[in-house]
Every structure is written in C-alpha cells, then in structure tokens.
Image (tube, rainbow, N blue to C red; front, side, top):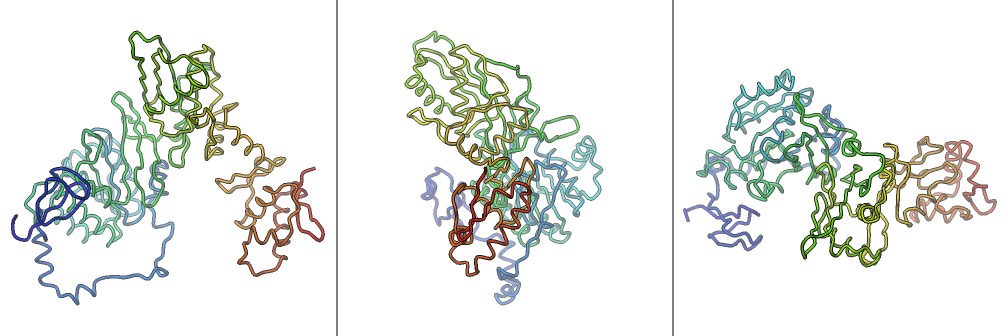
Length: 531
C-alpha cells in the first residue's frame, strides 16, 4: 500500500485501510481498489486556503427562507418524458440514463436538449463521439443547434472549470465511463474514476443549480457499469429498454427523488428520432380480433399510469414426463401458483399439460392484479370458449382461491372506458365500492379527490370535499354538528358550528339541483338522503 492511500469497495464504497478479499459491508469479492486518500489537486487547493476562509464560503440556509416555485422545473415538448421526471427537470438535478448500446440514449437526450435550450445554454459533453458525428445526428433529427454547445473533453477537471465559468442551464455527459480525473493514476471507466467524476458532477449541480444528464452503460447482467454507489449519488435513474427487432423503446424510472418511481414512458424509434407514444394502451392492444380464445385484457398500473395489456395462453399435451411452463412477460413462479389454484379449486387437469403464457409487446407485468386475467385466459383455452375483447379482468388471487381487492381501481376503469371497453370482471369488494360511490349522478373519486355531478367535475375546496365525502359515506344517517366538527375539522378546531352551515350552503350551490339531497335536520345537523 502506497503512502497516503486507502482501499474502497467498488460496489458499495466501503473504506478500508488495508486490502481485503471480501467486503465486510456488502459481501462482494475482489471489489477493493487502492485509491489515494486525497487527489493531488485537492491537496494543493486545501494547502493554500485557511480554515477560516473556507468556512466563510460555506452557505447555510434556514428552512423557512428556502423558496421553490414551478419555474424551477424545465419542460420539454415530450410530455411523457416530463412526467417521468415528476413534472419537468428540476434545477440542480442529476439524472442517470442507462441502457444497452444503440438503444437510443444519445438520440433521446439530444432531442430533449433541443427543448432545454429555450431556458438557456445547453452543453453536450461527449467522450465517445466527435463534434462532427454529433452534428450529423442532429441534422438527421432536424435540430438547428442554436444554444447547444458541444465539448469533446474527458478530463473532469477541465470540464469542472469550464462549466463553472460558463454556467449553462443543462449539461449532458455522454458517457460517465469515458471521463477521468487527471489527478488520479487509474484509467477511465474504473469504479474509482467513475465515482470521483460523478462526485464532481454532483458538486457542480448542487452548488451552481446546473442540471445534469449522465449517460451510463450497463453490463451484460443489466446493471450499471461501475460502482453501485453511482446510483445512490444521483437524484434519478432512468433505464432505456427495448428488444431487438422491435422499434419501440421503454424509458423506465427506477429511482426519482423528485417524482414517482416505477413510471414508464413509451417511445418509438423512427427515422427522425424518438417519438413519444401517448396512447400506449391502444398501441399494445393493436392487431386483435373481436373475440379470441385464450386472450384476456388487464389494466396494469406502472407508477401513476395505467396500461392495457393482453395476456395470451396456450395449452398442449405434454410429450414428455415433465410438463413445460413457458412464460414470457410474467412471473414464472406466479404461474405455478395460478396453475395450482386452477387444479385444486377449478379441477382443471393441467398436471400433464404444457402451458405457455405470453404478454405481447415486450412489457413485463409485475402487478398482482393481473392474476384473474391470466387464470381466465387459461380457462378459456381449456374450455375452448372465446372471450370478447371488449371485456377486461382485474383481481389478485389468494391460495384459497379468493379474488382479493385491488387498489387504484378508478384509474383502471377510466382507461378501459377511454378505449371503449364495455365490461370488466372485478373483485366483489371492489364492485360494492363502485356501486356505493355513485349517488344519483354524484360520483366521488377518492384517489384524485374529485367530485363529479352528471359527468361534470365541480370545484371544491379541500374542506368542502372532506365535508361532502363525510356526508356521502354516511348516507341516510343524521349527523350532528359536533360530530361533523370532530370528524371533518378534527378536535383541534376551536370555532363554532356556524362554519358548517356556511360550507353546506356553498356545497349545495355547487351541486346545483343535486344540492337538495343534503337535508337540514332541525336541532340535530345534516343528512345526505336521496328520495
């Protein structure tokens, strides 16, 4: 071990003063790399600056003084891309974009760079392509290039100096594996170099409010090349997926500090670049007949968006002793459970049958609400009856054969209604909720906290919504003013009951003719009653 050096685990970042074969923190083997305790450029900087002067440069903000507004997010013309980011790219955010070579990472980022230039200068740093190659791709994408600057540099120290002096709004680094810190002896692409370069980028982003996109390559196992610590250092991780032979691409959010995770956006690869597919459900359900044997549609939830996918099943006689279970796009262990339920509860003789289950389109289903659709598709093949393709199925199955309640049902039903579906199989508990939430044209959406009257949404304040919901949940029950105050305003409210009368008056007005259903019970309070 050289003087002034330590060992870091390339997987988790664990620090050790001596080399070890196995990391005591993450258990990885042969992952320790020797690193200088302090790079030469940092030593030089710290040796000439006093502690007092460094302390004076440190900025500390009181929580109440920190301001945030919608203008802190940069929007593009790609709504699906902005949705994955949580409503746009936040100032000072660092986003890691991964994917197989040739999947379209650079193409997509060059397209979004063309939108971000409306907010200020955009810097495209490439260690893999020359400026001429990037220019050639930009012309193919019909990008003018005004406000977009290209930098063919791999030394992070030079990049740091330029970015700090010019302060562009957005910086794209393609790719992190090509960068290196010239103050260190190791070559670019090593875990140590990747970690140090990413630390510099995060420092610039947070200190100067400059947003970064970092392109990262993945290994044959589908993991980000470099230390696992890289994914923890950035604010968001997007993975670009797509099967060979298919022209569509799926951008999946695996981590997002400023938005939802497990979100996906669908793009199609065309001659003039990436094109977003807004109606992805219709896209995945194309080329289907009116009735099919062994086919069932299920609305699955990916993050906050609902996708309609088709589940296909096929059963054949097994030619060998052990029956096959071939599954594509669904959990194979889950199929084993569903077949066991079918044999035990539905008496289907599947023990000596080959079973094939497929989800067309290449999108994998992880939502347990697809259980019922899979089982119905298997049952359709076994019985030989066709299922209408305007009917869907939603439900999770338990080992006792029960169909369990699913969540976010209203979102799923809206997506089905939008594409013209006429019916859907749902768990009994969900069916009762649906029937209960429609009060003679007054519908309540508990997930979106919306109230609609005869299909038209009405604007209610938060307190008005909570009050109306409490009345609807207690239909035909006389509620005293004290009880309403305790349940809607909670016990910490010190006002009088006249505020209830004021809110009731406003709600009646907004409900229009349906306002008559809120009855005044003299000497008691109020009651919601339909007659």
